[in-house]
Length: 369
Image (tube, rainbow, N blue to C red; front, side, top):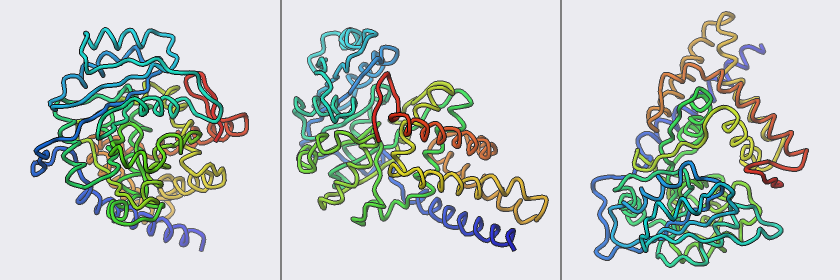
């Protein structure tokens, strides 16, 4: 009886995830679609980069942004208390280009998280019609901004969030980072995201968020999300609540990012966000962990008891492989999905420990959820 119930539950879950994946693979927008055209007078763009100890990547990022094939933009970088020479490296990379401004950050006020405060300061001095908040480790191909604006204009978006193509090198990165693609492509149907006002169908990625400046002001800017760990998702919900238009798109290799390097940074980076991504609820995170064990691990354990579990194990791998392939990840890594779930459990545990010991930790700061 227990095995039959489990079999039915896992099969039902995989059917829903599989159908969502299939629909998203067909309908999820991708940057650079050939029928997009820029308006005759393209909007001015402000690239807004909060940077804290990013000297290892900042020169490459600045060079890529200044090389964009787009007529009118500025690049604003806020040095958020860096101790490694980030500001100096950014200025050198800019080579005196008037489109680049490096701004020293002001002290962090109470009630603010560091990144949100940095973004707020950037927005205060930005002049563009479109504000593009992007991380210091995000890299842009020369035609990426034109593609982003084309998608924003075509979709009549007030907020367009792009999911960069993730670069993964070490095994920890390959096993964990693509789980974001599974969550977005497999769990979040794109049509309701674009068409329905319900906050359950709201998501965004802080690595690349493009706001029309009037929409950003209307939802309160970063002051409205001052203490939020997952401010990107809260922004998406506020956009919907204000009756504005949210759109998402895949970076399609035009915008890409290597988020972390190695297990310690992968573990801590995901632990920083995972509880907040579950609404700050330990119970919800625990239930989510159990769900993934039941759906993606137990079929591998129970296949010798009932051959139908072997079919479910294969279906889970196929879904994971499809989401990886769609987002330009390694499809064969899907064969190690049970190990990914185990590592995500470790990450969830670390997040819960941090929660009860003062809050998530990142770059020398502690933030409460």
